[in-house]
Length: 139
Image: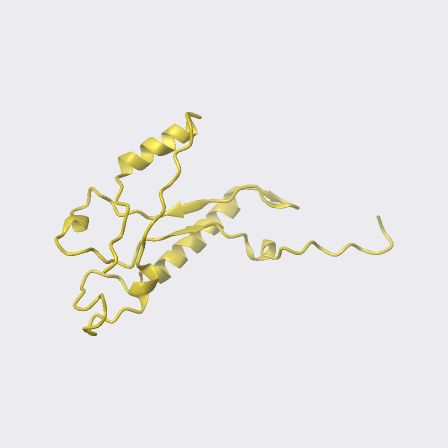
């Protein structure tokens, strides 16, 4: 079974963000071990599945995360300027299990299918890595 980790608290993430924003060093976000893709196709009725009998996983979690990533990307590009060179900022985000929530402290290993991370993607018009063709005859 996949265990989702690291489990963090909102306070711990806020301390790291504050440290970074105050210029007191970098507090990198830890990587996330997730089961979001696996849970999307899990069969809790199959005895061979690690999700056998599971009532806690969200088979729609991965799709919801992709929707969240799309919404976050659109918000970033709506509010942060781009120019002819593309986006000035990129944003990476991660969902961590909230260590203050009791669901993460059950006896069985928590498999939710909902946590993962992503990065903002450029809008459709910026996705091409090719430079625009130069017009002939004009400089």
